[in-house]
Image (cartoon, rainbow, N blue to C red):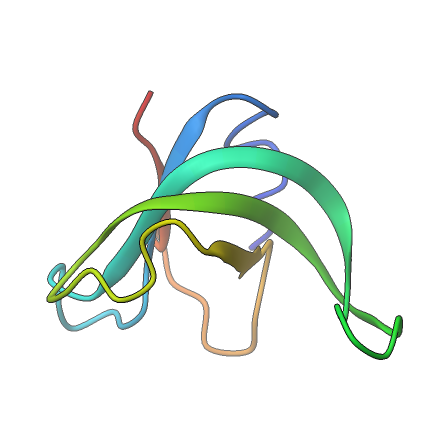
Length: 85
């Protein structure tokens, strides 16, 4: 499953951490799509969305931070990433 076309830059997505619950997530505006580069080492990490975190399930420790959401992963499931707006 590849979520590349779920959202475009400027749209808001919600990405769930676990298939078993809708309470653990990050939500934010997509600020970039494509290869995510490690902020310190400059190494390519994975292809995905870079978001500005605006909401977080079960807390708000990451609100205002930059978040990274892979387009696909080894434990993927339908609905892991949703278009919010």
